[in-house]
Image (cartoon, rainbow, N blue to C red):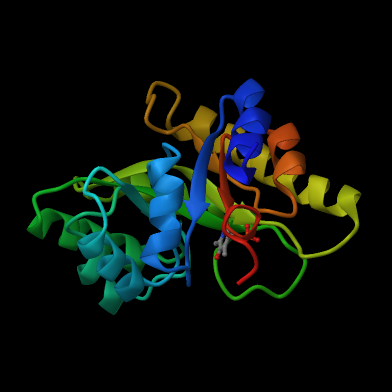
Length: 218
Ligand SMILES: *Cc1c(COP(=O)(O)O)cnc(C)c1O
């Protein structure tokens, strides 16, 4: 079995989707995974993503998974299918604006800080209630709020990692209940990477972002 096949076997009981994270990897490596049948890939740099989009088959679904600067949204807005790491209101507004210019609607996830490391990006979970109240009052027809994304601490302690994922799952459930109870589009909980995706799945993830396990170390 290839690494991809093994991961898909692990994901199946959870009905979770796999974003194959191809950052820094050449197009040939991506094509190899493509020819195994996979169509969903993630990148964390806007220009690298745009360049790969140009070169690779057009039935690939591209997700932007990393921190995104406002000024770089324009490179990916014409084609990207999901942006995982919305971490400010002004980025959300920029995505709405650029998606509108391309006459598109882009699915987005809000990034939430769950690691105890001093992470630079993401909303504090204690701010989510007011953040979503604000979003509800905004007019952003060109974005689809599809869920939440987070990254656990990079530590050996599995209990800590599981607890951080559980925090994000609780936030997801409460936001869903408060703001999107009848909106089937709000359904993505993006958490889990090569080192912790099994813990993430057990905690309720339905979208994992896996790079090195598929493509080898970077
Ligand atoms: C690189 C990256 C991943 C994948 O990391 P691996 O450890 O290689 O699986 C997942 N999410 C984000 C945001 C990343 O930048």
